[in-house]
Length: 97
Image 1 (spheres, helix red, strand yellow):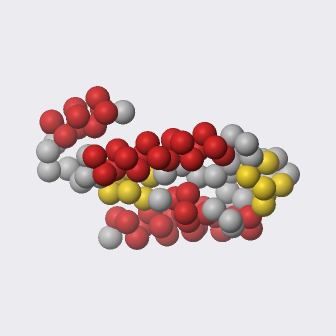
Image 2 (image 1 turned 180 degrees about the vertical axis):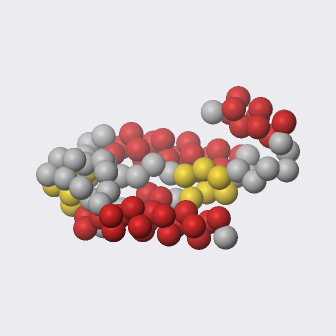
């Protein structure tokens, strides 16, 4: 990731770059219960947040947008229903303003 960011910063030093956190993983058929693999998501999100600070990237914290919102989830543990997608899209649009 750093090599890619270094490359982009070299060829387009004035570019505004955005990065987003990963979204939570819940147990299949239990949209209100985080899966054990969500710990990997949290670890990766720490890296994303560090990179955002290190490279002066605009951070879109999608994890915070949907955590605890079981009504946004589909039963597969990964994907979002239309309401969840709208919430994520609004968060992204707000960052892009």
